[in-house]
Length: 81
Image (cartoon, rainbow, N blue to C red; front, top):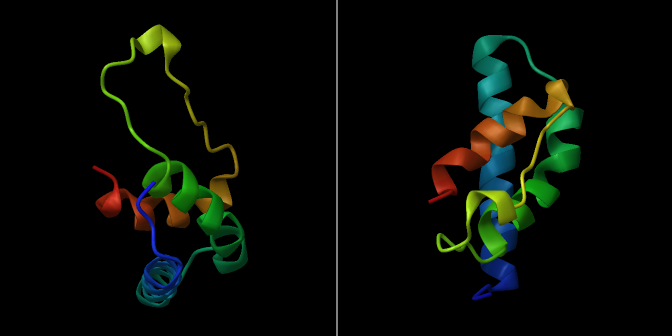
């Protein structure tokens, strides 16, 4: 895991700003729900190593059932490769 704490903190702040902008311009959204799960999503999608060599049956799946937090998932998707 190649990670720099300062860079991660800065990127999380940028993601929070993107969530705020999305809520502001759309005039809807649940900011606290999105903020409360953002660090977890960042770890799952950005910090954990990805392996394309794992069979689908052996992969882990993530289901976001906290619908009000979908803004966090949308914000983090562009960083996920």
